[in-house]
Length: 626
Image 1 (cartoon, helix red, strand yellow):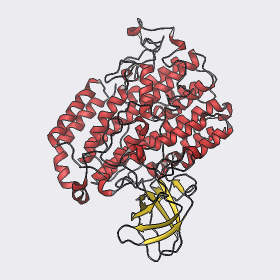
Image 2: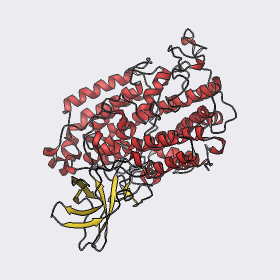
Image 3: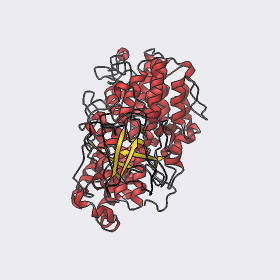
Image 4: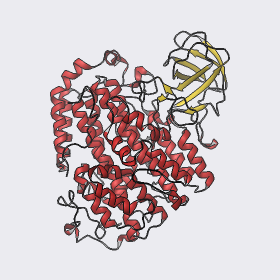
């Protein structure tokens, strides 16, 4: 098994030796001056306490929710609704574009705080999204979001259906807005139903990989590059999703998919899982990578906010503060798959526990990384980020193996084949980077249109690259029946099996191998109470974090040119700058060392013996993380 124990202990040593010195010398003056207005924490995200305001980012999973509701209709009109939801969003980063009755006589800079009113005359806090030049009559106003997730934004329109929209907090159709700082007023009008749009959408996540992860300072980010290299396109996720929505074909260098072979049932699975596990998945990793960039620049405020965003994109708002409710993103997928592979509980080995081993481990790493970037311990944070990336692939591997089994041993139909195909597509670039032959075997047996599927060959191919992927046999587990007994041939591999292809060794589990579990697989024959891979219609979570891009009413993401070429809410969080980031050092130096020591011990117990890191952040960065 891989090298996480060494990595975590190394991070602990770096943290212990450098935290105080870095904190004193590199913290920005702004961070120090803001200390008096900071609070200890914001609402938790599945037991993670963010130190910045990310309720707006956390709500991207609501776009996934409504996308899935539309797909569930399995009709042409339902898919049209889903396509609009994918492109236009509705729940994250809402912008009102208003038309002034008189052109501006002076320039107004981006970030200017503005007051407006709702139809009931309640006050609404807004901020100018981008510079407004003298002579213009157009203003793009971003809604300031609440610190309470349940009421984070009461103006949510975008591409949602009329019964799904929330408009009681939208700026009223006409009236007066006022600049807070000088009291200047401006008369305006606009259409609340059509001119409130969203600049963070699922499609934005799918289309911005090149700008945000490949062609940017200290890029390319390694995960993004391996995916774009494998598929031959930086917009691989968008191409996959649109082809699945329209019943078309992709044109990839590798991993092609012909959705003409599927009806609505199969295409539904390929859309909803791709938005969550190809688009949002990669943007969550991007946020952790971006946090390292801010860290190297000595910007702890930007680093903390970007790190918090990564957690939000991994988890989503539906998980609630406890993480025990059913969500739509990667957090939910990990908790679902652990019941199929008996990897629930803090140390794995359980079926009925509420939380997966993956999520227990990843929460510890989320907390550890948060402290590290807050203290500008960048080298240690890099190690932590690599361990997080490793863990995030485990539920995707489990999903691929599970549906290979359903297709092969349970004669699964179009739905099961499609689910297997999209899970494979979400992890194949990572496998290909480790071993091209293993990736070829998996695609041959699981790609869209595969003529046959042999789960034993698929499982063996995955196991052969576990070591290079930084994961272990016991972390992935094996498929169990409803009694928790391993199905025939589906026991976890052993340490000798996870680096070279060979027969799966399940001698140690022969007493529990069970040929009878083919009809249940602990999911009552379906991966969703409504026939999909989620108790509420999805395993998913996704979104589009575009705080800088083109001003686009079509929902492709982009109403932001305030940024330095990235997400550009890394400090403001979509809210008040004075409150967006909390007190920088929640843990003192000694308590931080003790916490990291505990985590290091926990991860050591996992028994990982990794090779060289395969998720090195920013390989061409200057300055570098050392």
